[in-house]
Length: 401
Image (cartoon, rainbow, N blue to C red; front, top):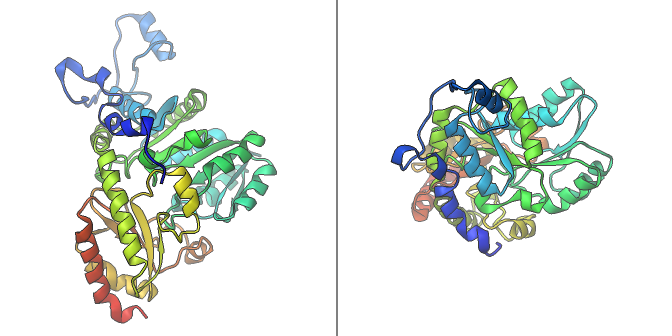
């Protein structure tokens, strides 16, 4: 992993203070939750200037909100972006970005094993608007470069991928995209700004499902897009008109969670790496998917562009889905649920979580075995998680054959 230096050493302080000081009202130490739908003005000319965006302020809650603005500003600072805008969910951020950037007749290049919801946008929704979608094998950078060179308006990347933790070379693929004038969009949800900065590697836009690691407490939905002021302004306009607005209370909860982001990620990075090493040697495990392992096919890329390997890993049990049915209920320190990035460990198979929208055949095409478990490491003590996994595997041994 890259050695932390300069700005990266300050990121913990930014997670706590970034974007907040200007909005601490009347001596409060926390950003207030502003539930007001509208914001009034006595001066009609001032009101008009704010409405046109010529002056800072707020008009209507669907457009902007003070609490939401602080959340956007904090993420913007962490991603070192010019601007940021938020959405009600991560999928709203992804779909809003794609529909902002693409028009009928355009072409988008991406990979086969993006998150299941994203995959459905590529397979089901964009083609209905006569947008050409080309999905390549995720591991094949040469194939990606060939498709990019044929021309495209958008290159959409997700790295590490959900749930098989493949890693894409952002700098290399961004260079290829720039040659044809394509906008590079990177889903940075798994890595977080603590572990990876796509904008510094050549990407134009960074997307997060803030529901996951940014919030970290599984109690608020949200999404956010960061990038240049010009691009984010266009995406904001799409969102303000189509209405997928982040709720102020959700923004407050996400802000609260982000204050401990650097601490949580530090623990989750360490635990996931240790657990991945141990599981990779277990006789009941078929394969472990984690970019921090030296034998991971993209380990070298991860070392080059990430400062930590993340808190999500996946592993395949011998015995497939039958073994999963036995194994998951035995875990005492993990929620069996469709989420990730929380302070508590969360586990589940892609068939009921990340890729529930896809058929078994589609999952197979993406290289997702039916016996795969996505394991999002929480902030529990590493040894407790290891003991929990060990006892669950022992109780599953008779069906792992």
